[in-house]
Image (cartoon, rainbow, N blue to C red):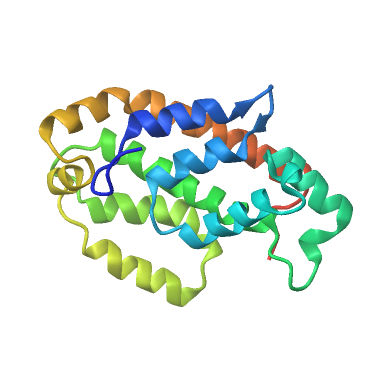
Length: 197
């Protein structure tokens, strides 16, 4: 994993590649490894999943399919007072959709394109529909504080050499993200868990 001030896309790519299980499943541990590198403000959700993975039913939290099957069959996803792994991971899954779209558009744009506009468009197409008005307003305000594209890329990746290396591996990273996202999206559809509150 990278230091806390830069993003290691090689690590993200490798983690998501490692997470692909069989033809239609995703290993939670590797998914979390890749996701954790992408964004640091998901610590509370990660902690919930770590507790599940260390608890007495840890074996049920090895992969998305196993977790959803277990929580659906036992009714845990509806149990009051229980922090559902399926619900928790749904939040991370939605966040991944935003991050992959924003990174893709950021990589395809040029230095004259506003990062705020790029971020706002990505947000509106992904996370916005799940957020109440006040969170959407706060997110919009935060986006206006984004630096220019060159400054943002420098902040994310550090040196010019790191940026060049990251941009070289970005297509594979996005491809891995897309495959992981597609599989998890299908599992939430199969288990009818998209509407978990």
